[in-house]
Length: 407
Ligand SMILES: Cc1cc2nc3c(=O)[nH]c(=O)nc-3n(C[C@H](O)[C@H](O)[C@H](O)COP(=O)(O)OP(=O)(O)OC[C@H]3O[C@@H](n4cnc5c(N)ncnc54)[C@H](O)[C@@H]3O)c2cc1C
Image 1: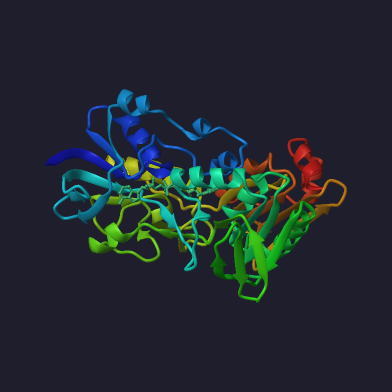
Image 2: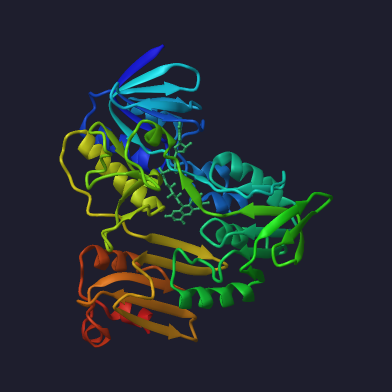
């Protein structure tokens, strides 16, 4: 059986949902289908650690319900896996042998969590709803929880776990959140998290898991840990097989131009599967955050509709709360920035770092302890704003509250 649509979107998450929303906002006449191998309305992966830790209900994860697609005239093929793309024939092959033909296609296929070579029934990554459901059951009865990998999966999960549970984090490198913040901020956060009971095992790995009533983990350093479950947060691999096998240009992700278009004129890509220009460095980057996926999904849809519209580039934009500490990392936040302005208030525990380029324009910020004004920094980076300087800030009422937070 072959079905034909004007617009086909693979991936019903941040990028794909924003794309179909944008298509429908501008055109209610074209035919649109969204395909996903998961069988749910779109949900927030960002919120899944809260569900696993019992801080929110499963129902609260959903962004839209089934009726949404029907109301908007969007056909859904959920629970269906796309196994091959023929870009020149404008055709997709599904796992069940059926075919879908498209006028224009968006690859919003995201990424899969990397796993370990050693495994157990009580070890799990967190990427999909089924993972969240499994982890929720395991966490409910765990007295000791171990995670490996120190990013946006392991740390929020450990921090939302029951307070009574023992919490271990095994980290391959010598610091946490190394993809998100600079070394000094990592050290600052490690101290705060350790005070909340996190036990860190840095520059280490898990080489063996022995099953039993409890799991016995053997570490590369020779140490051993007894635990009830293992969370695997070792980063992600973008889903680019369809694109690669179709002969599209790929690197780590599917390469896209400033219009989110791939090397084939009728195939676009957005979100965690797409590698496009970073706003600050201008280098091809996979940003791996929700906001970038939404922005690229929207941009791709506009261009698929023929409204030529350049995307200025993606920005790091991670805002989270871990062990009660609010953290935001926006834009370029590494030690080699031309200038770094930092403040630390011991009484409040707030730390702020503003990263400037050689022309004193704001290129990034790390806010720890309070993130309410993260949007202001995002705006400054996006608008190439010159940092006004602490003294100038002091003279302006507009920024008075900002200054209070800075100090
Ligand atoms: C636990 C966790 C916490 C996170 N925390 C944050 C955070 O605090 N802040 C932040 O900004 N980001 C966070 N992220 C990252 C954020 O969720 C991703 O950047 C975002 O989901 C990317 O959206 P996407 O639409 O590109 O892809 P995805 O969300 O990965 O969705 C891709 C979809 O495509 C489907 N698919 C793939 N291939 C096929 C195929 N061949 N056939 C059919 N369907 C297919 C998949 O089933 C999937 O549903 C977090 C992610 C996780 C997992």
